[in-house]
Length: 540
Ligand SMILES: [Ca+2]
Image (cartoon, rainbow, N blue to C red; front, side):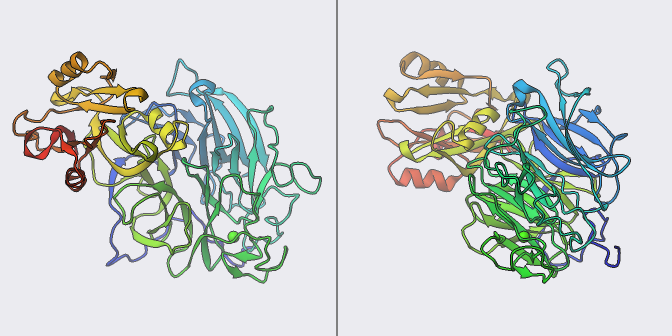
């Protein structure tokens, strides 16, 4: 069956010649890893980032530092080589209370896919209990390649598992279109509804006898990364192609289970391999983006990105080709507009990940690094994320990961990221002081007020009773000179404070002079110090 060697995702390919291609703006975040394959956060407010090493270790990045002790070391269980290894990690949506994490790997001795659960004791928050293992799935793999590997929880609380078609080339046993086979599928499990799981209603064959009940979607070849948009639950899938097309598939939250077409279709191309409904039949959900092997060889599914480090604005799905290093964005949700090429990685990007603030990272498989999208940042700092709520025309910034999650997923109602923000220290290092944050209850305008001036904090408390002091421990910035507004520390940049002059007293905090000037031109009041409305000094 090796007449035609399938494209191996993990072959250490010679980098394509990238002369002239603009590099993606990336800065080293963690180095010294061995073949990182996955980057995720736990959603528990801890701010930690978790990285899988392909050989079988789960590493913890805490406050920007790689911990020496892995959270989990299952190297003795993992069959590692080419496309095999420890491939996927997910934390339970309520990890802070359940303490469950889920891994997907190919096992010793037969290379079968294993999905299993481990528990992280409260007493040892950075180390899982290896004896807590609870198996969920064991799926035989007929060939070494196309193991999929993603495990991700959807907005519905169910665990999605990306399964490749079993390997070789051209899906020789037509597994991806076979309803009785778990290969070439996206599986969906209710891990809270049974032991080890229950079948969620709405799976493709949940109530019928004509297919395996774990199947949510079918017709994928080697889904290398499932990505849920935290705002709405929409799903993006990078599906690795055969010889000609790489594709990104999409399913809006709540949509009927799709058939993504493989092996009858490779992207929008008819393969002539047969084995399912005819090519271009309405049964198939076509990709929202694809590219030919002129631009690469193996898609690496990406992440939702909001920031300014790559071209464009608003929410974008950023993805890459593993071989060429080219990266592209499409709008999220997909608008039908063409993908936009945004730069090259300069390395074989095995995975994208997102921290609890929504910052995006890339795994450099051969270089053993996790790279952060964007310029290098001051050590010991975290993002301050800006949101906007149209209903009350209100901007809000927060540094709290759980608050960010609630604003992103809509449980706090109607907030959307602006893509702007700045950074803050997490403690009072180097002269940074605790920012006081006040809250004005809805009856008084539903607004927030931040200050880096202790005297102003005291004054607001004494003279403006409706303001409620909400916190003084989350965000640390520096105070500007109270007369000139200058930020004395050259490693900091000004944060402008502007009031919109309305009775609801909405304020905006921004490092953008253009935003400040727009607000002032519209009748707002510059409320900081000096001629430029500088209220705080934020680290870069
Ligand atoms: Ca397809």
